Image 1 (cartoon, rainbow, N blue to C red):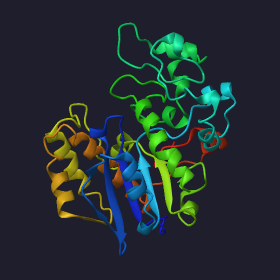
Image 2: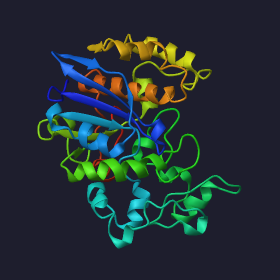
Image 3: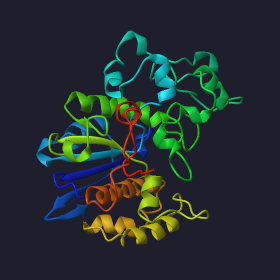
Length: 310
C-alpha cells in the first residue's frame, strides 16, 4: 500500500570521506516523483540544517546507508535495551570513548567497541570478538544483517576494508542522527510504523543498503561486473530507467544515470545514492514492502533495513 503523506525523499550514500558523501533526491508532484541529479554533501552540518531538516519541504523520508541500531549480543552485556535511549546517553562519562576507534586489541572494550583504527600487520577479527565477549564475527551482526540473502553487510563495530560500515556510522550518528533526533526527527522503525510516522513527523530517518536496493529493483551486478566501472554502471542504469515506477527525471539526472555518472572516481557513490532513492520510491509507492514483521528487539534495539523481508 502506498504511503501518501511523504512529500520528499532523500537518499545519502555516506562515508567518513567528504568526497564520497552523495545525496539523491526526489519530490512528489501530482502523483509522480521528480528525480534530481545526485549532489555531493560538502558541508554536513549545513546540509543537515538546510536540506535534511527543511520544514518547508513537507514530510521527508531520508535514507542512509549505515547501520542505525546496535547488535543485541553486544547490547545485552552493557545493559542497553533501547537504541533511542542509548543515543541520548552517549554524552555521559560511561560512553565518552564510544566513538574513539581502538588502535590495538588492548584498547577494545565494551564501551569502546570500534576496531581497528588503521590497517597494519596482524589485525584479526578475532581480536574484536574476543574483546567483546562473543563467539564469532557473525554474533556482532544484527538480525537484519544475518537475514540478508547473498553477500551480507559488515558488522557495525568492524572498521577495516572496503565493505566496513563502522566509520560511516560513527560520523553519521554524531553529525546527523543524534542532532536530527534532538530537532524532532523520527527514527524508523524505533518510533513506529512508517505510514504512521509520515502523519506525525516532518522528517523520518531510516537505514538502507544499496546492495539490497539493486537486488530488489532487478538491477544487481553480475559476478563479472563492478560498480567502480563506468560501463557497468551504464548497464545497470539502463535497467533502472525501466522499473515502471511513477517517476519523472530531471534532464541532468537522466543524463548522469545514462552516462554511469561519468568517469570520476566518486561515480560509484552517486550511483549508490540513486539506487537507494529508487528503492525508497518503490517502498513508498507500495511496489515493495516496507519490511518484515519485526520482533520487539528489532523494533527497539537493532533496527532494520528498509525494504528487507525475510
